[in-house]
Length: 169
Image 1 (cartoon, rainbow, N blue to C red):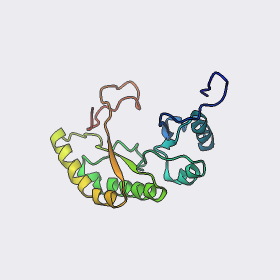
Image 2: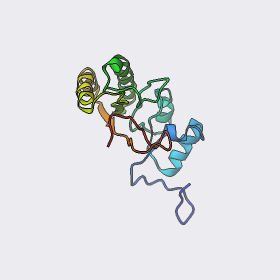
Image 3: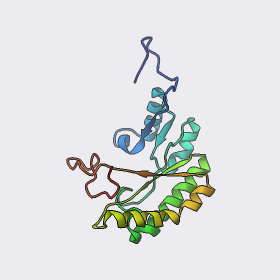
């Protein structure tokens, strides 16, 4: 754990930082992750399942950005770029908006989805159409929908690169 020269845990929170749940879930249970976040002075654990929101609140932590449940796939695979997934994506996004709003969290992650042969201009148009179906609900709840851009050029590791993702940066 980061400590000052005196050996105390850093707690000032000068910089707002957040731990990302899925990165550490294989190594730490939620209680340990909360402990580490507090010791590091983080104010948030993000991209965490809503079932953990009460636990975050109990420990004065927030969820900086809520995730969507697109099980069994990772949430970036099926997105707004493909109309055949709109119903599922909109339901998952609505569920996350509602859960986050209940706890006062203000942002939900969204994804374009994998290209699956969809040309970029068509994927962009489909995203706009999909967002139009959910944006009113997000606005009513005071939520911001955040579009995640991912690197498609790295293929050596499944979570470092996302070849085929429509929303490349």
